[in-house]
Length: 163
Image: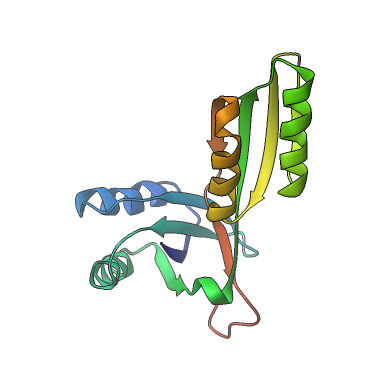
């Protein structure tokens, strides 16, 4: 998985142009998050994709040609802070199941967001691998719904060029 941090102009249509570039070049987006930066006229897009190095280089070159793109950084996972949030709703029709799931959530530093006599919803924040591990652990209880935000990331430490 590669993480792209793309600084773009904060104006209508930019998200469409970038995702359309991915589509037209037959690149797959694993996740995408977008939000305003510390500068209100700029947004940061964090895009994760799975590809080989040659394809990634081609993608970066294509993105750089878009007029709304200000800066692109391919983040090194070892030198970046990146997280994702997931909400996972599971079947939990008996008290024992609810307690077991709550214990697993505690181990993963998750939070119980909702609990009823029939379901339990857990919030997990971490790397995509951590979320996948929790999801695999609780899959036997019967996952009803999953909502994931996509990865948000920043480089560690100071970066002279970063906007």
